[in-house]
Amino acid sequence: MKNLFVPILIFSLSFFVCNSYVVLGRQALVGGWKPINASDPEVIDIGKFAVTEHNKEEKASLKFKRVVKGESQVVAGTKYNLTIKAADGTVENNYEAVVWDKPWQKFRQLVSFKGPIKL
Image 1 (cartoon, one colour):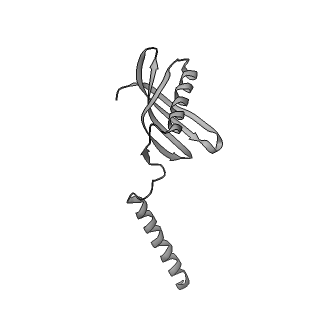
Image 2: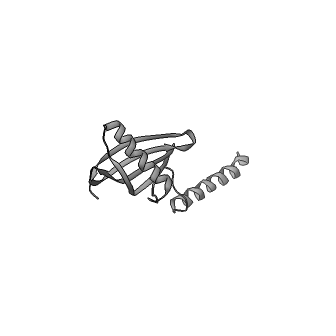
Image 3: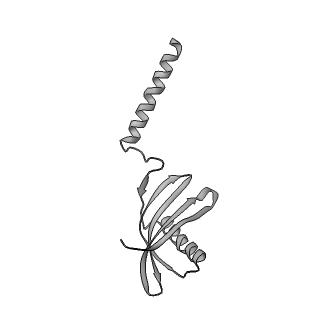
């Protein structure tokens, strides 16, 4: 039993230190939402994808204008929660889209698309 005390103590302390490090904000938490750069080309591509998929599903004709703001969440891939400005004819509105992206599998799915919304 004495032979296990030191390894268990070291493991317990290292676990405590690592978790404290994450809690203190030194590392992004898996599952936590974090802000994104709305002008990042990858984010813009995901915004365009959301509008295109919505148009296919709903037989709509929205035209993507820009990503207004958003946040990402690390899951099995990355989930993006975006506010998108899109035009319906001559009227521009904001919409909220959630997209799940797994680039290593070439997988992208529109989870939800809501709007128009008010900011």
